[in-house]
Length: 112
Length: 114
Image 1 (cartoon, each protein chain N blue to C red):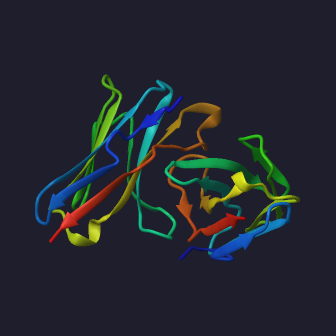
Image 2: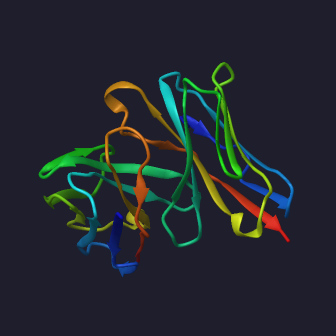
Image 3: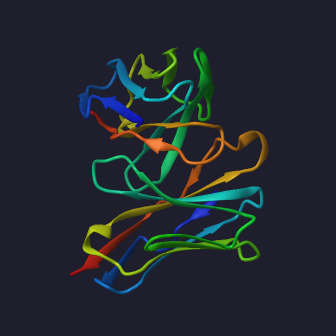
């Protein structure tokens, strides 16, 4: 069966510090991968989407970037965090570009 | 502009009764709809989906109804159980090039009272 891992579970970082969140998927090959953010009191917002290694689509202009160095690894990064980057970050995968997406456990990021 | 709206932030239902969660959308290009359930500090879990070629899809206690003319869908949970207490998100995706993109509502918090 497929599983998705995210780490860390929680993170507190000062403004201006870098960020690296990692997501890995097991049990499937060539998944589509996604990064979402849920800010307080809001729905989930798609940040990045990847259909393959090195292929990243950015949905929202922001202070963040994403990379996919391996087939089942997706990394969310920032060079300098802003207060507005605080939120709950979720990685997800799907087997096709259409249909259900399956989410990881999430990372709670607090920028202070 | 919110393209997927869940106008009820919260809902309380007695155990054993029916829970009805509602969702409205504005984008006519949406043709695939999903419901997710989310517990605190966890990722959303996929519950059920429906394509626009159908008006009803059922899976155990969960049924989703789609009214395309009204741009409205609803999730029915019968009978409701305390373990159903969670935040429920409605999501939609368009046909064509943007089909990978799910647009989520803000969620409805369901509380099932024992």
